Length: 454
Ligand code: GDP
Ligand code: GDP
Image (cartoon, rainbow, N blue to C red):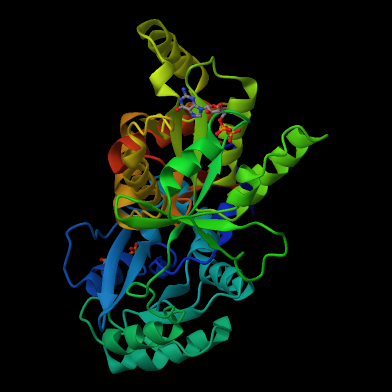
């Protein structure tokens, strides 16, 4: 079985929304030497040299971007997952389980010249239980004789076998057509559709300048908008233009209301921050740069990171800073904001208007990272390189292996690591750092989930 572990302290609800951008995943499973890699190469339209006549041979790449009839998908070759040739046979069923978990469709390859083996039975029962669509591939049906024998594979209980010859290309077209039919239907094209102004929460402890900033940004043309449909509370949003683009600042009524003298105002302020974050895609955290960072500032920053929203840190009241304060501020930032070095920073003054125009591009940049997707093949190649150069530390005498990585969703970017053991926090942070160095993600939290083979 597999256990799921959260790699970060960050566990917002942000990762669970449907994700139209993800390519469907097709996994090729089966015991060694049945022709998985040959089939993968056939689908990719090339005869790669990595196929060897050795069971369990190591291949260092496992995921590819592929297409058939113009439909794109990610193709995963599980033949490359375990470099340990002796242990491999025992692990095929487990690999099939991983494959079934991450795939939308599974191609289960069996050697039709050999017939059903115990290992095939084991894989078959894992796949039947998974509930995922499975296409049973009767490979090495190079001629009609074998093709006839392939009917014996009905006994696996996975429906009609597709007789093919991966080597010669026989029958693979029909197989891929069937695979396309089994893929989940693509979501309606939303790419061209206008998505409306991006939703931004302006948060920060009392007196940092939130309402001053709102006034500065909104100027004369304040546009109030009704709460979004489906919300029961009374928040009022404001459409605000920054650099020619319109943003929807959510729940600004709470900021403008001068209720801080009320009893329990802190409690309500905290509630408001949470509800504004819930309704937003990005947050601008306003900080009074003229005073030392407080616990409350740090709590709000953590809250934003945990909510999984894109983040801009706006250091306000910059007009009040002298050289000494600027020096100490940098020290404080280095010391206290170590968990969110990825947040985008702008130094502004709501009073003078200094650099307020930079907020728009900063929000855009953060939201772009928030919606970024790394193709599975590229991600696995990159993580594979990192792991080879710097393997995970040995734990309990064992070296955990990373079998496969996929970015399961965007907004926020969420990565799922399939591993053979627990990855230490330092190693997880190392991987996150490398991912950020390579792919950016400036302004966006990254969510990491680990699935560990028990
Ligand atoms: P994998 O371990 O499942 O990835 O298997 P490979 O793709 O490495 O193939 C194992 C062996 O079977 C290789 O020698 C292939 O050339 C051979 N093979 C693969 N597909 C076919 C096929 O359709 N017909 C025949 N005759 N041999 C095949
Ligand atoms: P809020 O509680 O976060 O909405 O903060 P306010 O907008 O009410 O501002 C609190 C105080 O800080 C007010 O006296 C503002 O005039 C002052 N203030 C806000 N922004 C700036 C700024 O950029 N520079 C200076 N010097 N004062 C500011």
